[in-house]
Length: 327
Image (cartoon, rainbow, N blue to C red; front, side, top):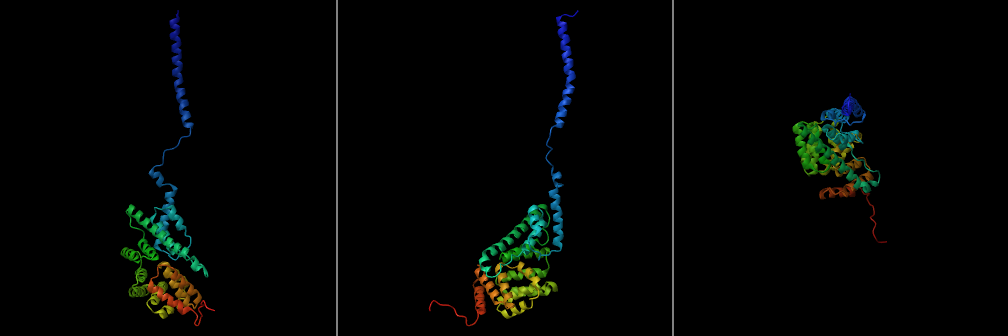
């Protein structure tokens, strides 16, 4: 016969048994709730990121850029897709170098007619900024190549020399060309052409003439036009305008090569060459506009200004009357 105490123990045994039986069921319910709840995955590892789409896209573009640099076409211009690629893949050296090459070839066009003088400040800023942007890409390519322990992409130092010439920095250009030649980045005639521009900017006309002449002799027949444009510029600056006009007149039918010559020139020298070109074409009005634009820039020095003022005087019609304040 059970007493009150026995009944109590029996109840307690029943509760304990029920509780123990319920424990597995509660664990199962808890596990199911955890599995059904949205859980954020772990952060991607370095290796997972390396296989991600942005990395592989930039690696593909870098391979394409390396191919382009093996057969460059520096005359390409316009809004190149490589500009966007350089922004999207700032750690791909070859992509940065190709973007710089395309940027240097992107010569800003002149406005038409009498608007040249009015637009000259904007034109000068566009020219300067394009060269600075190219230099920035090239320097970033050097930094990244050094970080990787790799040599810089081909043409890097040659393009840095071109950017320096466009900014009117001949000493910097010469140093970069020495490195480019040491690395075998370009043919000797291309380096001689750029060195001739550097000598011209420093007023070393004899050296400039020798280098430009050698560049013309060493260049393939299809590339000699570039050096002939430069020779005409140096002839005129050296006091041989007839020889300069003779060279320019012989090139009238070869429009396509002019852009290649412009890449190595700062804006004021490009205007000088355009004025010579217009004189050779017997367009005195257009030549006068280019000469005046040349004088409006701060870069020309006193001897060049005197020479150009004489050119302008020669272009004025003979017997023209200069108005005065009298009746």
